[in-house]
Amino acid sequence: NSDTPPPALLPYNVTKAGIANMAGSLAQMLAGKGIRANSVAPGPIWTPLIPATMPAEQVESFGGEVPLARAGQPAELAPVYVMLASDEASYVSGARIAVTGGKPIL
Image (cartoon, rainbow, N blue to C red):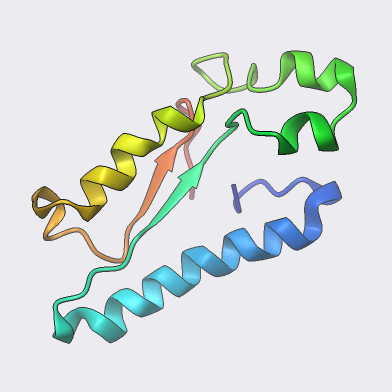
């Protein structure tokens, strides 16, 4: 996530921080129109990017550093997006939701 950016992924890191700030700004700009804006900050999630950007020995332990001691799966993020899009989240706007396996974000 944008709070602990790995140096090898500089362009990716910039986009993650930009998305978080864009969501906060959009939430304020669009609130008067009844539009909510939020972002999701995933922790270590298993995607094709992982083996493509890491040595094999790091891939094996990927995700082990978070309190849940494993990488998350993309399907574990889906309920967060569904909740944010639902009426149950009608008062949630400008938020960054951490899906990090227990690792706090700032």
